[in-house]
Image (cartoon, rainbow, N blue to C red; front, side, top):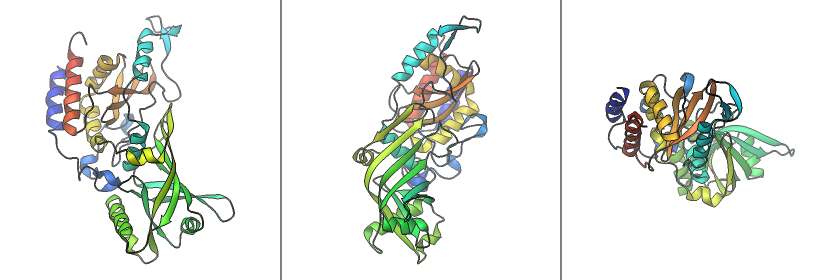
Length: 345
């Protein structure tokens, strides 16, 4: 019964293929998912009422596969809940499935995390006394994914950048709360842009899209800066998912096209289709769980936090095929919901 209702409501709520709010990669965090339309439904987002989505949902909260909040499923049982010391065949099959589950390439995930962040990060600079400094700064992602900034001459980090352009910007995934959440560090050089130059105008446009209330950027003591000469990119996508990306690969990648409407889809699925979520995990991943909450989605699948026998962990729920727009995501979820409702699923 839930399956029929789920299919009907999914079609109605997820809607036809249409542009994401405020354009594909428009205002607010360079992805344009601000406003009420980006807020998850009550009870959506993370389990326990924590939304964790902000302007865009984080792409990588569930990328740890079977690694959980400090532990992973793995101990077997004898069918009565008693440990056997071995590995439950269902868990072994699940672990094998997760090892091959489709995930975004590191470069694309890093670009997406930066694009979907709240537009703030920690800028690490080199101080005159030889000690590193750290400042929370606003930024916007340019078309190439590199950050642009508006710095005041009164700020210590502005003087430090002028003396030594080498910096690192650490960006946390929107709604970052613990080590299971994603973060990216961009290391490169930051330079001041010439006043009145096309680059400065482009930086101003991008920054005001990400921070529309930042009227102060036009004050006389503020200037435009941008990162150049990207040296390295470090991505930590969550438990057991970390790696480095070359500057060229990062710039060449594109932000995920599905992430901008992750929040409303996840919120709807969690608020209205909790049973369907559990059934989809069992049918597609092969794991019996008690609860399943969509944390985020991207073009290749969903990151889902589940509970199983008292353990809470994240897993990957791949789509049957890549979904490059909202309609394709809707079709994938509807198809998986229907498949999970079949008697032999």
